[in-house]
Length: 458
Image (cartoon, rainbow, N blue to C red; front, side, top):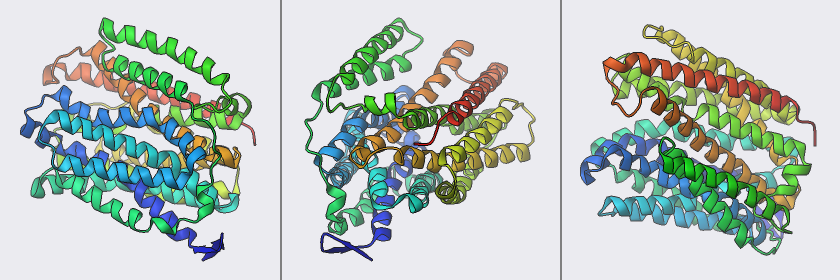
């Protein structure tokens, strides 16, 4: 028990509260995937519409992460973090009673706003709470919550959907948020320090337009409208960077990116890592069911091996990052990930399941070694007044990487297979697409290793 501002508090208890909140997004996201067929059946929604159940949340997250981080710096991290819990819980409760598909997408967007407010400030709170010698382990535990959510989501999501209906997933989500709100008063006052800076409204407008054009451009990449939107996104990106560079309190910490080599390289490494790995579960799920004939439950059980391995590896990697240069530890993790992805690029119709499981373990080890040390490197290289922005950048790279990862898959599928439904007649083309994507991801990760090793100490 420690005391500051004449108010006793427990660092471990606050870490638990933040970690529970961190658990919400990956759990709900992985659980809702199992409920999509049931949602589609209830609302008579096609596959493209169902994809927006996930995409609406992801779009809101990417748009609001940087603004939520800046608000945390200027208005208080605890205040914005707890407001995020309230918004996320409200979105969950509204989803339980949604009567139409359109409203479901709106409520998922609201959840995404709340999730952005949570994730933009969770790592900042931990960084502020724990000194450098203990920070890596604390961030490792927080990262473990993400992997735990990914692990438990498919099991509990499937069970809840089957026995209680898909809406029960959001009831569980709302109940998990209650303890965090109930113990809101346990956060010490120093975690809510404010910089009182003017909010960058122009940056918010430009970044929102940029992300929306990029997101829709990737979704419609094979159409003229998609190509146009991507071109507009490039122009908006250049304008946004130029505008932010001239701002005293920019939404995007341009000064950090330009002058802090470790911060820039570590964020780039995070973007590369998530871009190269997020779609792996999606691709292997299709492979196991289409090519190998596994039932969904069996395929999902096999794929759980990777996040389970990450749950055990991440805290140990966090401790290692407290003793060694965290950037070096993260680079090793990226290298292991590249090897695992290259192994998946050799998949065939008769690849032994034991080999696939071994590659999943290898990938889990690589991701577990990379994530928390890389975050520790980012947060350890910024001043306290930038903790919110740095934490938001970490979450931003994660969400943007997820979007780019799925975008790459859609592009390759569209070019090689077109819009044809996957049937045995096009299994060869499907396997060729799979191998090409995994090979591209492996090369991208190898480039990430080189970039990661070039960063210096702060």
